[in-house]
Length: 530
Image: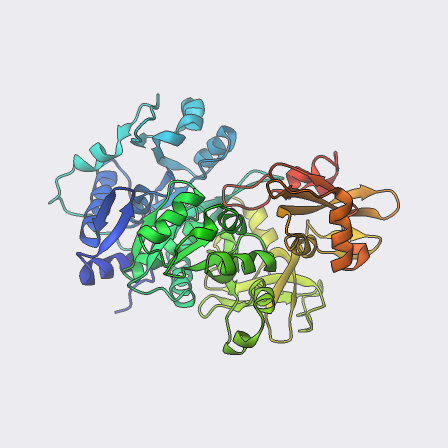
């Protein structure tokens, strides 16, 4: 008899073979796989008694804690769908998402309950469950999480639910810049296949100790919430990105694997304690979210000894669709050359399906590293569509392919490399300028800590590049110094015409640069902003 593909089955396997192994480390709390399973089952039973059934939606707004992991399993093994919420969104966006998603209940962390307090009277929730946090207090009228799961006798029967691999496991809302957030519908099958890719290509083993630096609400932690359990490895939780504490955890818990956006890498390599850190485990780190500069990858490997693995994907694809496979022949290259290779998005993963770069006529671009096209994909990890949004679904899914909106080239060896988002490409006097290429040069400058390049209006050329730069502490450089450096290291027409020094760059909760916010200062009333 065939069984459905669902990552829930990996919890069954983990508790069967590793019942007394540490599954969870969350500050001073630890749980074995047996204890973790007992807690998730208690949550399922409590939700069922409260009325949650197969097909219902439950919203969850929690940071990276063991409670968040329990929700992924406890909600979905009832056949209900979890709606992970970005706790950094505005109250207005959260109200829209909770209402639009048809969530019947909300599980919320007390520290981040403020926006919910503002909108609670407008929500159609049947129940609010609150995770208490020391030092914080909420005015929400809800039930304490621990009390909620403790009310059910431990010997009560767990409801038996027939899981169809094609039913929804999560509805993940993407941030909206030009429109309301869109609910990405991801099935049990898509999550299973993506997590299998995570396990295989990130080489997850039973002895791994995984640090949850990546927000678990973001594309289900890229699949890590399932894959680590699948291998019977250990989850280590982190409420917020705190570079000194992360370095401490590297040593204390012997971290071997983590994931994060390039901005996380940047804060780690620039942490003053980084150069003195003793990290014997040489952790593997997967990075995605924005094209990382080769110079940044080089710093991560040189300063921290991290083994960087570049992956690529989108929430709409569960998320992985490419990874930069490392070949033995690359070992003979210089560290700089290796970093350039690792900055590429790479090739298809083993299980996700087909991904390629196409021209506007739908034909694949030449494998010459020059011809620009859009990345498209189809296969096992693509979303079912946007929840209650057939129009946007039709725009994204064309002729059986999901269109990413990312512009890229394909190198002769088949490795895909993003040159820019379509909306971030700078077209100056008819020439295409990749903002990420310019950023890559800027990151090589020793006085540059962070950089973002955008298009600004220009009377003669239509638009030209401008660099927004965060300098290293005590840096002593001028705008002319930066422009001259760029002109010395790339074609003159690609170099920024203006440089503005800023204290910080706007980012999403997952570390992506919000370039539209930078463009707003220069493109009033123009579509170029978004």
